[in-house]
Image (cartoon, rainbow, N blue to C red; front, top):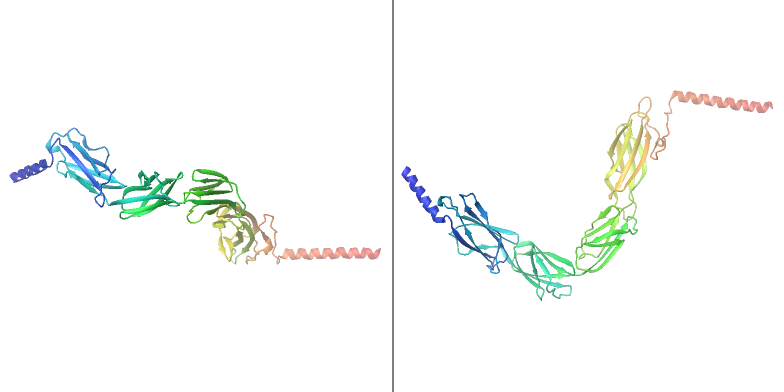
Length: 420
């Protein structure tokens, strides 16, 4: 048994030793090709392999090498290990091109003379022209991260990996004109640098012009409008600042040339405030909210609330729409309590309006749910009118005595006249 094990170990050692030698010097050459076996230049290549084991250097990675015009890169990998039993023969090959990486493992001293790496890549010919179709000769051009220059006919050549989203861009009139295209096979694409007119107006919600700071890409303008002729950018980056407010409209000049930026500066109106008591003695505050100007942003339904104070405790409840008005419900206030409340309403740009009010809640002494007349509540902040129930016996007796006093006064007055 032991003899068989030793024999297997010897065979394995012989096979292992046959892979590579300790202290090997291995010339390696890599050929990088596209989907149609055309050479790819400027692909980055690295090799990771064992330098040695005994001195603790372990595996190392070479510096990045780049394929030449023929798609080739070559180097010599040197191992310094002294013991055959400790040498490792695997070489990890990494090749990156146009954002895609291929990884392969080859064996030192036992690999092809030219290790081929294939990318699913195709040729892309870009023809850059102006709006009249004239070539943009000798212009900087970029495809993804690869840069080049057009020739005298406005042409540039690239090899790109098969993608649905390839970024093609050319410099034109101090700007960069770019497009997203798809490359599924060998492709010829004409990149036309069109010229656009751009008009921007800045107004408030009433339609009046506003002086603002307008930034179009890197150019700053001050005023209520900007007019730019023959810009090569279909989608310029625009920001408009008025006071502490900044807006960044999405611009696409290929769709339209004129844009308006509105700053809503007017808070909404709160009107028609009413207070009612439900049969369960809950309190209901109703009101209307309007943002009246022609360019107003409109009420923000999530930012309309009612805060109320009962007995020194303040709470806030949201309002909801019911029957075309906003409604807020307050759970059963105590008998004869004064409820002070504040209605707050914002529009969609954050402008806020508030209205204060108060309401005196009155019930009958018998607790039968009688409520104060409608005139008892108000939303103007003035003192409420305190109403007493009309079936109070003391009130009736007082009224009778007052009537008798008036009659007695009139009687004496008439009597005095007759005596005179």
